[in-house]
Structure formats: C-alpha cells, structure tokens
Figure (cartoon, rainbow, N blue to C red):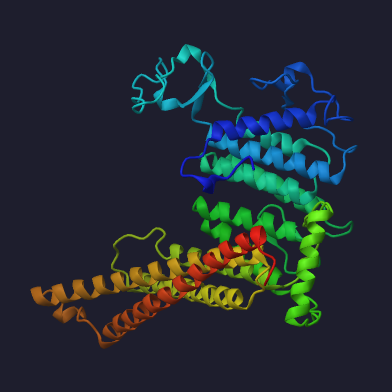
Length: 466
C-alpha cells in the first residue's frame, strides 16, 4: 500500500506523493508501461527527483490503446496524486537537502515571521533554496478531466473532487463552474433522445424526466451541497427536493432467493475456495459501474435518499434564522418556528429511515452500510442540535416575558406567558429527553457497526470460516 493514513497519527505525504509520481512516470514511459501513448513534450513534463525517467505529463493523454484494467490503475494513481498534492499546497522543498517543510518554517522575504522548527528537527530552510513541494492539485485534476479513455463515473468523480477542493480553498465561483462541468459530463452520457432531464441553469431535475442516471443524481446533489455551503439556500433546496422526487420513482431490485446450504457443506466449500485462491491467481476485480444507468431503489439508494432528506432538514432549519434580528414581530417568529419544526421533522424522518435500513442491510453491502452509518450519525447530531436550539429560544421568550411582568411593563400589553407557551416548552423538554435516549441507542449501534467493520477486515485477511 502506498497510502494508509490510519496506520499512524502522522502521514508522510511527501513520500506518498513521490511514490505516485514515480508510478505515473513508469506508466507513461513508452519503454516501460506506456507503450502506445503519445510521448509528452519536454516542456509539458514534470520531472521526478531521484529517478531516471521521462517524468509524467501535465496534459491529458489518449488511453484508447490501453485495457480497462490499465486505465483503472492509471486513474487511481492520478486521483491519489491529486489528493497528495492537496496536502502539500502549503509546503516547500529545500532543493539543497531534498527535504519538505511546511511553508510557515521557511526563512525569507515572503515569510518575515517564520515559525520556529520543532526540537530535534532539521534546520529551517532558506527561501532562495526552496521550490513548491508538489505540482498543484489543479494540474492532476485538469489532467484527469482532459484524458480520453476514462468512464463517465471516473471523470465525474474527478470533477467533484476538484470542485470540492476549490470550495475548500474559498474559490467558490470557480468551484461552481467545475460543478457545472461535472453536470455536463453526466448529462453527456445519457442515451440519445433523452431531453429536458435537468434544467442546466438551476440544476433542478425535471418532474417529467424519464431517464435519471446515477451520475446525474451525484452531480445535482453535489451542486446542491455546494449551494448550501455557500449560503445559497434558496438555490439548494429545490435541487434537493427534485433529487428526492427522482429517487422515489426508481423501481425496487429483483430479489432472487439464495440457496440454503448446510453449515458443514458451507465450511467445506470455503476450504476448497481458500485452497483455490492459493493455487490459482485471482482474476482482476470487475470494473465498477459507470454510473450511466438508472439506479434501483435498493438499500444503498434508500440510505442516499435519507442523506438527501437530512440535507433538506438542515436547509429548512437554517433558513428560519436567515435575515433575523431580535425583532418583536409575532408573525415573523411564528414563521421561523414553523420552518424549524419542518426542518426537525425532515431530520427525524432521515434518522428513522437510515437506522431501519442499516439494521436490515446485508453485511456484505459495504458501501451502503458506510453511507447509512454516516447519514445516521450526522442526522442524529443535527436532531440533537435542533431540539436544543428550539428549547433555548423558547426559554428565552418565556424569560423575557416574565422579566417584563416582574418590572410591571408587560401586564397590560399581553406579555404574560401563556399556557400554550408553557406547553410548548414542556414539549421540547420531552423531545430533548427522547433525543438523549435515542442518541445512546444510536451510539451503541454505530459502535457495533465499527466493530463489525473491523471484524470483516480481519476476517478477509485471516479467516475463511463464517
């Protein structure tokens, strides 16, 4: 493995990045694994320190002569190189010692107040000896998007990763352009004659769309999340609702009855399979789905639907405070209160759906279980925060009115705390108790899921008995 961030607390990203650069150089070297590829021009190459190779190209290549397996490995190397570059954007390499440092330690005019290097570390680098530690993430993502030979799903994944990186760096307008690019990629792979699936100006899936692929769902959902992150809630909400509407129209998968084997026979089959794996070289894994097909409404899709519901709940709840000031308008407060209740209802339903789906999902559906686990954890945390905020605001309203009554300012002007308000406060106190109790149950479920994930990993490494 070139990368295992969970193996230790500190990940050696410079070494990981260099490993992928060496791999890319080999894959693109016409004398090694790059036969049939057009050799990159010298000015387009990125030379890798420490190896005798041509380096790798900054520009996209034509992979039409390569097998699907080769393209898949090449794609993985590029994506990992892009991720490594993200971790090195604020680092420099001292060319005199070939050591990478965070930029904050560099001594020079562009960093007049360098941070002291830790004890027992190398001496701080001088700016005149430093170069960027890596090519920019944009170099790798642009190459991924301009290379011919990747599937629609691979190109869309690269576009969404690139846009997410731009969002992280604060380049939100550029990120939105790349999200639109991703939507174009998804739409370009729909069958000929499929029209008006998505409004390209708003990203909303049409209610009359007859063919909505998995890639279209991914692209529109990612665009909606981008809008929500950048506080464009009015743009995000209709996209989420259109995605939810499209998902509910998918057909259920056809369930085929699985044969029931006796335990002893099943164990013998496992032994034979284990011996076969030792003697016979395993076949290369099947290619993942391209994402150009219409998904079925299986357990994984239901978990993704619950995640969309959680996003809707967040937006509705967050919109209750947009433009708010400590105003005294009863109508405005009631409007906000209704939005909060609506957002809370969506979130509660998302938690219920993800929990019931996770408990009934097949153990070998690893991606689906991961999606459900993340949705359940996020939804439960949101539910807790929402109830606590409503209860806090309700208590503040009661305290203000009681304060006015105590000072003699509110007795004749209807400021007295009503029985309904006291009843509402009691309702949210009971809801908070329910949330705290539910939180404990969900936490135990998530812990069991984490333990089961570890057991599946260990079982795949060392065991063959079920």
